[in-house]
Picture (cartoon, rainbow, N blue to C red):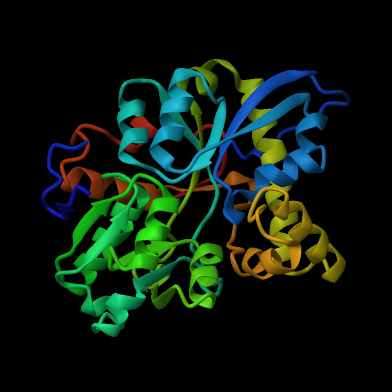
Amino acid sequence: MTDFTRRGTLGMLGAAATLPMLGAPALANTKMTVGALRFTSHAASFVALERGYFAEEGLDVEFRFFEAAQPMAVAIASGDADYAVTAISGGLISLAEKGATKVIGGALSEEQGIDGQKILASNAAYEAGLTSPAMLDGKSFAVTQPGSSFHYMGSKIAAAEGVSVTFRPLQKVGAIIGAMRSGQVDAWSIVPHIAKGLAGADAVKIIGDVADYLPGYQVTTVFTSADNAANERAKTDAFLRAFSRGADDFNAALVDRTAGPEADEEMVKLIHKYVYTDRPFDKAAGPIRSGAMRINANAALNLASVRDQLGWFQSEGLIKDSITTDTLVDSSYVEIMS
């Protein structure tokens, strides 16, 4: 394992739903690859496929699944994926600076009153006194890569508590889970369906909430290649319309719970086709429900949160000081919350 400290990473690295629907799709049978993680938080894309919203827009979608954010950004830049949903990473920002990628919308958000991402301690660290984020001083904090969302969250939590942590890059979420279970790493932050599942299995302890440190955090964004953003507007609008319909269904069923118990059950069964597929439905349903966080209506983007993230990357020396939100974001597609 390679360790790095919080300050030791220097040098490393208009609204879619309002658009008019046509009587027939103008993009009939347009093939498209969408990057995703097997997380409940990616359900808008799953719903859009399973309920035919992509097909209604003339999009023939297949998923390509990843285990971390930065490889997904590389896939968008290389053309191996057309659109994707994941957290802002140093890799994504650097590719945007090179003119290869653009954020075009927002997805998962921390919201007051909605149970969000959790801060975890390994059982060994908890028994040794890591019972709250205030006790993180001198502890190790798991991340996938330098400049990942995990790195951002851990650094902001440590700064708020006035403590120093050592970040341990483990490349994949699965490797982090293994390291947390075995006590090889002390702490981590992750979406609730994973956090609660691990805690419920007595594999880790929940010691805090990310929202207490990052209220309104734009956890994930919708992004694409700079070429798609600039030159494939019809296709990009179509993707965002279908994605937004999927988000509306998801929020109504599992976040706002306004769609009724039958819709709840149907939604969980749909998501189970992609999340916790190695578990029987009765074992997967609880974690899927408990992992439901808000997906922004109409893919609206919280630009204030994006600015904060960019500022952190710059303060860590992970991206150039000259990079601005305009470098990263094409604000012409969705509502911008500033």
